Length: 303
Image (cartoon, rainbow, N blue to C red; front, side, top):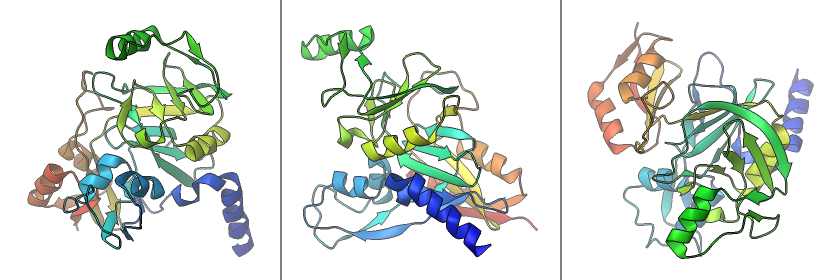
């Protein structure tokens, strides 16, 4: 058994070389949490961007998890909480992108591992939709055929008329890899603006860092399901303790659905359907108000 496990681990390191820090085993026995919280020290030359890129954390999540830190003025050696513990999303098949969390999860085809990365998603008035779709095409070194809506927006905003298409290269905003969704016009792709990853910056597509999109591109086949959700609150179990992870809700024009309306109460009710729970609503209200993005104990399994 030890030899088999060693082979599996070696396979994961070889197959996902760019994402070693983002691979987690799917928890067993009904548990829902992966990763762990950790502390990091500010290094010489660090900025908020270098820190969040080093630890693969979204901008808002890093800021919200450290309300006492002035990220415009910190010192070498200062300790910062790295919120790299996650309640797994409701859907656990294929690719799941939670826009409220600015995070992508990929559940491997063998059902044993999950990879997770920060992403950039749609900014205000260009929100990424909440839908269930799938990968219909994959292209390395993609050409970007500029949508008319974006050409018009850029002309009005900057006075610059974009060309009909931009070929592969450093000026191409799709980066080196693109996964095309069945929802026309929407892609998961790389970017030539790495600092935008982990923020609300796109025109609706999903941007990933270069190493992350390369790993995902090589791992997922055409036909992989993609769940685009907007769940500001997730609840899940770790042993007999129930946790709530809360993020700041984002505005959305879509009609309420199970893809985009998970309030703290909704998330807790769904998690409690696995096991009856005794919860502290005072703690729940505090977690939901602070939306630090850190999974926090809110109750325990009822005896």
